[in-house]
Length: 356
Ligand SMILES: Cc1cc2nc3c(=O)[nH]c(=O)nc-3n(C[C@H](O)[C@H](O)[C@H](O)COP(=O)(O)OP(=O)(O)OC[C@H]3O[C@@H](n4cnc5c(N)ncnc54)[C@H](O)[C@@H]3O)c2cc1C
Image 1: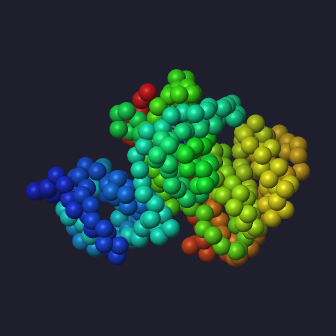
Image 2: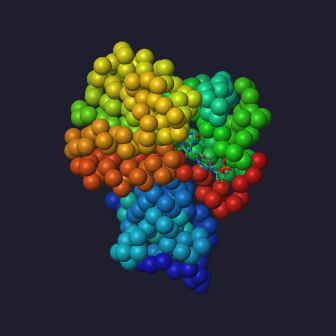
Image 3: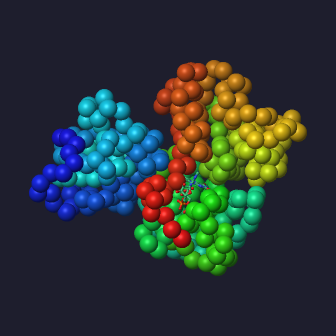
């Protein structure tokens, strides 16, 4: 067991066995173990896929791995590496591996599919966010859990992740909220060239950021388009008649960025167990009683100083997720009741290989 950079005699493919699950799959030497697991239909824990968040941490029981640039990823502490932990989204196999990782039981049963789909509707929601409705083939609906995401597969093999905003009980028409990234390969094309009727290929569902049934109070913290998976969760809860104390905090720069504020206010009016606060970080004034100024995670914490009873779901920019991971457990939130999806940009964008 160990991490080496340049060993002799390495096979082009390795067998990876996941324990205690028992599943085995093949992983090319240049491929990360997480990508190979997902391609084999095994939904292992992960979030950012860029080596930052540590969600895909797993224990290497036998075999050797390497990291792309030979360096320990940022999301893995030196002491963890010494104890045999690796980050599967970065680790490439040097030989056959045995890895201890637990597929998420609630998502392990859902098949990951690669499917063609057609853009059924495109609607501008704010200056830089569009709603994309994807129509799936009638015979191939997408089974998923509220909160999960999918990857849009681009022609050159790259992929871009987007959370599903529609609920699981609508498996043939999928809603996404896509923010335009200046200079972004895929989102620029979407805003410029793609139209109703255009074909895309998707893979999903992915991720273990999923709503868990339960009775205790829930805090949903969204940053920007981090509202998308919260909308899926809220529609699932509201339309299935589940009554549960839910506090939604939605952080945005200005009121224009709260692109479905009216819808949420209407939900909150009809369902007294749902509370809603919008938190604006770059506005001059709040201008409505349900709005306040500041950072969304700080407002949520100030209004819930004891998080001991809560489950927290957070989705949005990596900086917001990091702040929540650093501060919420200190206010009584048990670590195993914090679920998050960090909206990092794609790893190939980080390595400078983006393009149109
Ligand atoms: C699990 C998950 C779920 C996601 N869900 C959503 C969603 O529902 N809606 C949504 O709009 N986005 C979401 N994202 C983020 C989205 O996948 C990225 O922003 C994506 O890289 C944009 O693709 P692009 O090809 O347009 O830009 P890229 O070509 O990937 O990026 C070009 C350049 O833009 C910058 N950049 C890219 N993305 C961002 C970013 N997010 N923040 C700041 N700078 C950036 C980088 O400098 C990058 O080099 C999600 C990400 C993850 C990991």
